[in-house]
Length: 195
Image 1: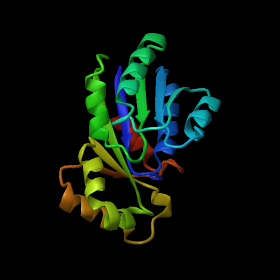
Image 2 (image 1 turned 120 degrees about the vertical axis):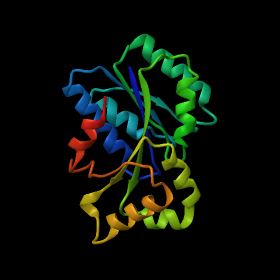
Image 3 (image 1 turned 135 degrees about the vertical axis):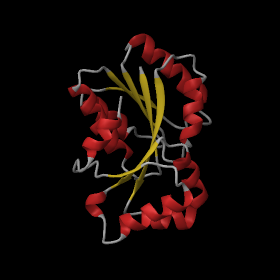
Image 4 (image 1 turned 90 degrees about the horizontal axis):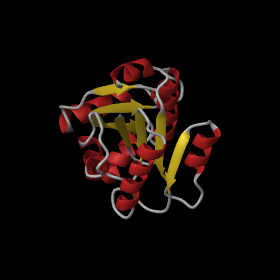
Protein backbone atom coordinates (compact mmCIF):
# COMPACT_ATOMS: atom_id res chain seq x y z
CA UNK A 1 0.00 0.00 0.00
CA UNK A 2 1.21 3.47 -0.92
CA UNK A 3 0.21 6.69 0.82
CA UNK A 4 0.21 10.08 -0.92
CA UNK A 5 -0.16 13.33 1.02
CA UNK A 6 -1.23 16.43 -0.93
CA UNK A 7 0.42 19.49 0.60
CA UNK A 8 -0.43 23.01 -0.44
CA UNK A 9 -2.10 26.20 0.68
CA UNK A 10 -5.86 26.76 0.55
CA UNK A 11 -7.10 27.03 -3.02
CA UNK A 12 -4.03 25.49 -4.66
CA UNK A 13 -6.13 22.78 -6.33
CA UNK A 14 -5.63 19.86 -3.95
CA UNK A 15 -9.20 18.54 -4.26
CA UNK A 16 -9.14 18.72 -8.06
CA UNK A 17 -5.81 16.85 -8.05
CA UNK A 18 -7.18 14.35 -5.54
CA UNK A 19 -10.09 13.52 -7.86
CA UNK A 20 -7.80 13.18 -10.89
CA UNK A 21 -5.49 10.82 -8.97
CA UNK A 22 -8.41 8.78 -7.62
CA UNK A 23 -9.80 8.44 -11.14
CA UNK A 24 -6.41 7.40 -12.49
CA UNK A 25 -6.03 4.69 -9.82
CA UNK A 26 -9.59 3.47 -10.44
CA UNK A 27 -8.72 3.05 -14.13
CA UNK A 28 -5.66 1.05 -13.04
CA UNK A 29 -7.99 -1.22 -11.00
CA UNK A 30 -6.34 -0.23 -7.73
CA UNK A 31 -8.50 0.10 -4.62
CA UNK A 32 -8.13 3.69 -3.43
CA UNK A 33 -9.21 5.31 -0.17
CA UNK A 34 -9.36 9.07 0.32
CA UNK A 35 -8.85 10.80 3.65
CA UNK A 36 -9.95 14.44 3.58
CA UNK A 37 -9.35 16.94 6.39
CA UNK A 38 -12.12 19.54 6.28
CA UNK A 39 -11.56 22.94 7.83
CA UNK A 40 -15.14 24.17 7.82
CA UNK A 41 -18.48 23.05 9.21
CA UNK A 42 -19.75 21.67 5.89
CA UNK A 43 -17.73 18.81 4.41
CA UNK A 44 -17.95 19.84 0.76
CA UNK A 45 -14.88 17.88 -0.37
CA UNK A 46 -15.95 14.68 1.35
CA UNK A 47 -19.51 14.94 0.07
CA UNK A 48 -18.29 15.57 -3.47
CA UNK A 49 -15.91 12.62 -3.35
CA UNK A 50 -18.53 10.26 -1.93
CA UNK A 51 -20.99 11.38 -4.62
CA UNK A 52 -18.38 10.36 -7.20
CA UNK A 53 -18.35 6.87 -5.67
CA UNK A 54 -15.01 6.99 -3.84
CA UNK A 55 -14.29 5.62 -0.38
CA UNK A 56 -13.82 9.01 1.27
CA UNK A 57 -13.30 9.48 5.00
CA UNK A 58 -13.64 12.99 6.43
CA UNK A 59 -11.84 14.36 9.46
CA UNK A 60 -13.63 17.65 10.19
CA UNK A 61 -12.95 20.57 12.52
CA UNK A 62 -9.24 20.66 13.13
CA UNK A 63 -5.90 20.03 11.54
CA UNK A 64 -4.67 16.46 11.16
CA UNK A 65 -1.09 17.47 11.85
CA UNK A 66 -1.97 18.91 15.28
CA UNK A 67 -5.34 18.70 17.04
CA UNK A 68 -6.55 15.65 15.08
CA UNK A 69 -3.31 13.65 15.05
CA UNK A 70 -4.76 10.71 17.02
CA UNK A 71 -7.87 10.79 14.86
CA UNK A 72 -5.75 10.56 11.70
CA UNK A 73 -3.88 7.56 13.02
CA UNK A 74 -7.09 5.80 14.07
CA UNK A 75 -8.66 6.56 10.69
CA UNK A 76 -5.65 5.06 8.89
CA UNK A 77 -5.88 1.86 10.92
CA UNK A 78 -9.64 1.64 10.26
CA UNK A 79 -9.17 2.25 6.53
CA UNK A 80 -6.61 -0.53 6.29
CA UNK A 81 -8.80 -2.92 8.34
CA UNK A 82 -12.09 -2.09 6.60
CA UNK A 83 -11.10 -1.28 3.01
CA UNK A 84 -7.59 -2.78 2.61
CA UNK A 85 -6.71 -0.27 -0.13
CA UNK A 86 -3.79 -0.35 -2.53
CA UNK A 87 -3.54 3.44 -2.29
CA UNK A 88 -4.47 6.03 0.35
CA UNK A 89 -4.52 9.68 -0.67
CA UNK A 90 -4.61 12.19 2.18
CA UNK A 91 -5.72 15.77 1.60
CA UNK A 92 -4.94 17.79 4.71
CA UNK A 93 -6.26 21.28 5.24
CA UNK A 94 -4.29 23.97 3.42
CA UNK A 95 -2.86 25.10 6.76
CA UNK A 96 -1.23 21.73 7.49
CA UNK A 97 2.47 20.97 7.28
CA UNK A 98 2.78 17.84 5.15
CA UNK A 99 5.93 16.58 6.87
CA UNK A 100 3.96 16.39 10.14
CA UNK A 101 1.26 14.35 8.41
CA UNK A 102 3.95 12.05 6.99
CA UNK A 103 5.40 11.57 10.50
CA UNK A 104 1.94 10.64 11.80
CA UNK A 105 1.49 8.09 9.02
CA UNK A 106 4.89 6.58 9.90
CA UNK A 107 4.02 6.34 13.59
CA UNK A 108 0.47 4.99 13.04
CA UNK A 109 1.56 1.36 12.93
CA UNK A 110 0.13 1.01 9.41
CA UNK A 111 2.62 -0.68 7.08
CA UNK A 112 3.21 1.05 3.77
CA UNK A 113 5.46 0.42 0.80
CA UNK A 114 6.05 4.17 0.72
CA UNK A 115 4.62 7.49 1.86
CA UNK A 116 5.10 10.46 -0.45
CA UNK A 117 4.26 14.16 -0.29
CA UNK A 118 3.12 15.99 -3.42
CA UNK A 119 3.52 19.75 -3.02
CA UNK A 120 0.98 21.87 -4.87
CA UNK A 121 1.12 25.58 -5.51
CA UNK A 122 -0.96 27.63 -7.88
CA UNK A 123 0.08 30.13 -10.51
CA UNK A 124 -2.63 32.66 -9.69
CA UNK A 125 -1.82 33.29 -6.04
CA UNK A 126 1.81 32.29 -5.70
CA UNK A 127 3.26 35.82 -5.64
CA UNK A 128 0.83 37.09 -3.01
CA UNK A 129 1.26 34.00 -0.83
CA UNK A 130 5.03 34.26 -0.95
CA UNK A 131 4.88 37.98 -0.14
CA UNK A 132 2.73 37.28 2.95
CA UNK A 133 3.60 33.72 4.04
CA UNK A 134 6.96 32.86 2.45
CA UNK A 135 8.37 30.89 5.40
CA UNK A 136 5.18 28.86 5.71
CA UNK A 137 5.12 28.10 1.97
CA UNK A 138 8.78 27.04 2.17
CA UNK A 139 7.99 24.70 5.06
CA UNK A 140 5.06 23.16 3.17
CA UNK A 141 7.04 22.67 -0.04
CA UNK A 142 10.29 21.56 1.64
CA UNK A 143 8.61 18.29 2.63
CA UNK A 144 7.48 17.51 -0.92
CA UNK A 145 8.98 14.63 -2.87
CA UNK A 146 8.01 16.64 -5.95
CA UNK A 147 6.12 19.89 -6.56
CA UNK A 148 3.32 20.69 -8.97
CA UNK A 149 2.87 24.25 -10.16
CA UNK A 150 -0.86 24.02 -10.79
CA UNK A 151 -3.34 26.04 -12.86
CA UNK A 152 -1.05 26.39 -15.88
CA UNK A 153 -4.18 27.11 -17.90
CA UNK A 154 -4.58 30.40 -15.99
CA UNK A 155 -0.93 31.52 -16.20
CA UNK A 156 -0.06 34.95 -17.53
CA UNK A 157 3.19 35.35 -19.48
CA UNK A 158 6.22 34.96 -17.20
CA UNK A 159 4.33 33.68 -14.13
CA UNK A 160 5.44 30.05 -14.40
CA UNK A 161 9.05 31.06 -15.04
CA UNK A 162 9.04 33.36 -11.98
CA UNK A 163 7.72 30.55 -9.76
CA UNK A 164 10.34 28.16 -11.13
CA UNK A 165 13.05 30.76 -10.36
CA UNK A 166 11.79 31.02 -6.78
CA UNK A 167 12.02 27.23 -6.37
CA UNK A 168 15.47 27.18 -8.00
CA UNK A 169 16.62 29.76 -5.48
CA UNK A 170 14.81 28.61 -2.31
CA UNK A 171 14.40 24.82 -2.79
CA UNK A 172 16.79 23.89 -5.60
CA UNK A 173 16.58 20.14 -4.98
CA UNK A 174 12.86 19.94 -5.76
CA UNK A 175 11.61 18.31 -8.93
CA UNK A 176 9.01 20.64 -10.41
CA UNK A 177 6.21 19.89 -12.88
CA UNK A 178 3.88 22.48 -14.38
CA UNK A 179 0.32 21.16 -14.71
CA UNK A 180 -3.34 22.00 -14.87
CA UNK A 181 -5.24 19.51 -12.73
CA UNK A 182 -8.46 21.06 -14.03
CA UNK A 183 -7.76 20.59 -17.76
CA UNK A 184 -5.46 17.57 -17.34
CA UNK A 185 -2.55 19.33 -19.04
CA UNK A 186 0.73 17.49 -18.28
CA UNK A 187 -1.01 15.20 -15.78
CA UNK A 188 0.34 12.15 -17.64
CA UNK A 189 3.79 13.12 -16.32
CA UNK A 190 2.41 13.11 -12.78
CA UNK A 191 0.70 9.76 -13.27
CA UNK A 192 3.97 8.35 -14.56
CA UNK A 193 5.65 9.19 -11.25
CA UNK A 194 2.97 7.53 -9.13
CA UNK A 195 3.37 3.97 -7.93
